[in-house]
Length: 203
Image (cartoon, rainbow, N blue to C red; front, side, top):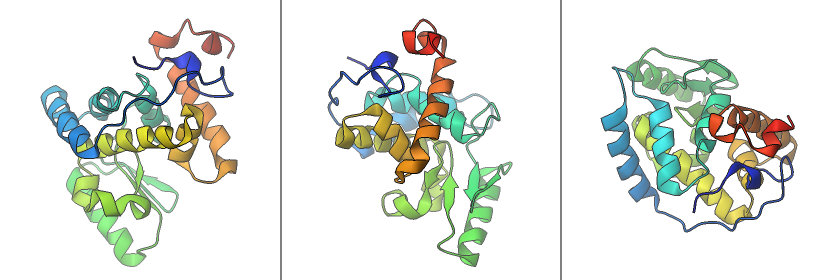
């Protein structure tokens, strides 16, 4: 059974009442998301929305949650851009994967410790490079989305709370989590599937 919004974000809405679901492996998620994304993406630029939705299904996440995170990470630009980079707090939207790779490599060559977030899920490179293995993989929309889904699901399995999972997805620092969680909730409430939810109606 998939979670629904009213159990999602303690204490922003109501208390969490759902135990963590069964975990799924990152490798399986990457494979299934890659297949779904490749078949459904429209036009020459891959769709982050499609890849993130597939990752939600693979990891049994609340429908729309990972996409809401993606929209928050996109900074209100509308479409979630697959080649988006945040380098040291500054957002960049290269026109192609090749341009994004070149910019990321240049930034890391100048300062290997500079904060770098990449792709559909804005994955923090320094924290997750050991699993992603390469910038090429991190900037593959299907792999990036699959990893984002696995990460959020894993955080939920460890915390038992979707609110905590969303907050920690953004930052391990407690003081930076609440505002981010509220922004994600705001995006989620824009999803018509949750329009009638009591928590969204109170906003």
